[in-house]
Amino acid sequence: QVQLVESGGGLVQAGGSLELSCVVHESARIINNMAWYRQPPGKQRELVCEITRSGSTNCADSAKGRFTISRDNARNTMYLQLNNLKPEDTAVYYCWGSDWVNVAYWGQGTQVTVSS
Image 1 (cartoon, rainbow, N blue to C red):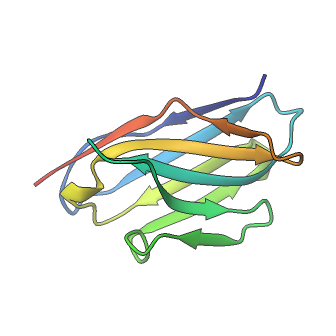
Image 2 (cartoon, rainbow, N blue to C red):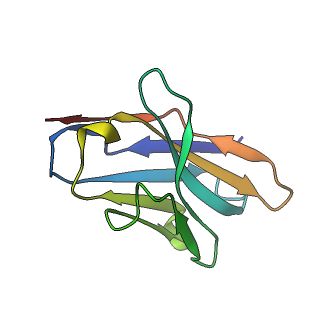
């Protein structure tokens, strides 16, 4: 059973930074595409950034210039560096991954709260 486990969330003041991590447990399964999603309070889940196994990335306009997605395939880990955080970035951040037959997996989420 593949498990995605996020960490690194917390409470930070506006303008601050956080680094989120997502570890893929069950290393026998190769995870191809990965992504970070977030769900602000009372809103729908939305894509933040995505990354292929080869390292190609794409981020939502709200994340460009502030957030950086990366991954270390040898460590089965994906990262999201959050800089210049704003109160509107407050959300539960979820890790997502899909394997080579497009089975998708979600993490349990980690809370990011940005105070003004």
